[in-house]
Length: 112
Image 1 (cartoon, one colour):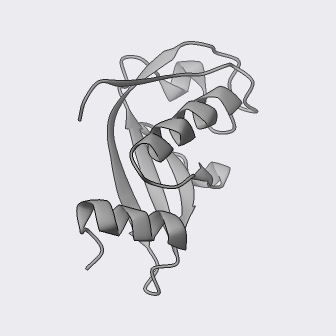
Image 2: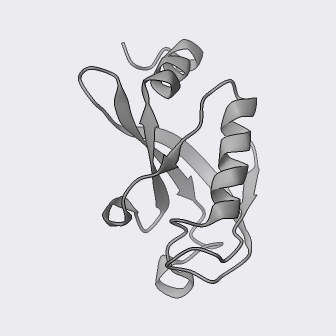
């Protein structure tokens, strides 16, 4: 994956930290059988962001804004944060819908 860097604003419910975060990978963690709902996991470099020290990126507005701009630029669709309990120690969990999954499949042929 090319160097992708997003910034947090520190305005989330679980973090007041504002800094850059290198993204290492983006993968679908789950896709419903009907292919109308799924989870996008956005993995980050834990040397940049330590959830034990920095908190969860979850609900940070700037991170989500930059992520969605990146996704749209890649020909995908917007994502939104999933619930707090789905966030990981090395990834941000996001909900994606049918339009996102259709675009992902068209780009990567990965849902067949």
